[in-house]
Image (cartoon, rainbow, N blue to C red; front, side, top):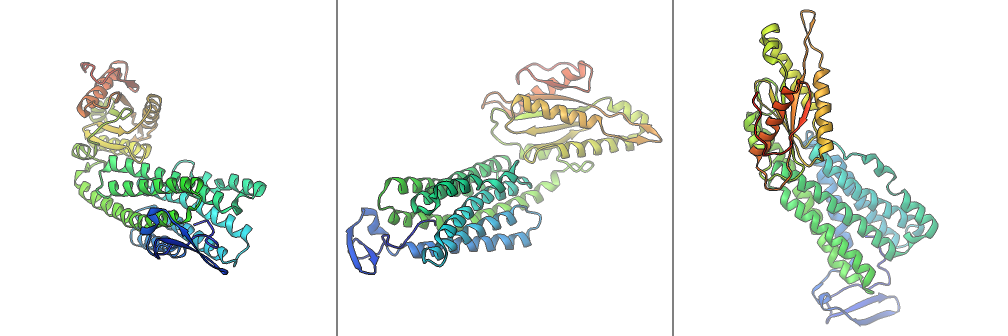
Length: 422
């Protein structure tokens, strides 16, 4: 925590009053009604527990990184918790005048900015297997705060520094909750909903704390309660993130039986199990069919045809986003489900995949094997649209692409349009 406790109110359970500890003696002050409930929630004790919850979390994530090497993100999360815990420890040392104020105030604020930023990056990497896009900007994220601190010296004001810390924490935690919400929607893991709720509540708690610091003159007793809530939140976040990793590992094992034996991607049953039960506007289906595949099999043989299918599946797998669902429906037909896309983005991805398939280079007895695909694209336009209607629209657009000359992308005009004969 980045605020001074010396000369501030320390809450204790003694006849419903606050004792403000000073060397010259004690002064009894009236306290808000809630303070009478804050038995033993004095700031030094709460901050010690807060530091401990963060450092224990860092240790748990380091252990998880060693035990579950296939689950990415634990190293980043360990760094996030370690930075936040270290910043809190330095703040405590600074309050006892063991460090220069101009130094420890800026260092602890920086630890808070980096720590909560890394928390978001770690959760995103846990979800997708890769850091967020533009995550390298995190390296320069504190620079504007450093410049402002150098010009104004705001970091030496306990109240201003605490507000900045709280608002940054609130923003990052709510962002992290949004990431978990997307994971819950795509994979339906049982641990996602409680983790999302804890992250959101922790973020809202920090936001309320920032308002309390700004509006309540004697805000320290209230922050004791807030940080007690954060302590519980830190432990809950640690446990639930580990639970999410376990849920995903179990889900992966369960889905192994639903993989296509030839290409290694999902089959039709895999798709039925993994597609979200509720579709949202922007959700997109790409229906992909290889051109002239029967002639290719007749000319080059079924072994070559299988090699083409494997190469196309690998191309689609490498070209999709982490959240996208890919399956082979049978024969030379593939389906790709892409959540939350604009029309321009969906068409851009479809065109990129079509070009990647066309660029596949295969040879048989010195002869080049031509590979191309037609792609039908359909997007959800209303929240109540059904999955089968969306697939039907993409299939209809695929037939339109075939009729227009093949090796092209066609966007369905409406999910309810009638099919075009092959």
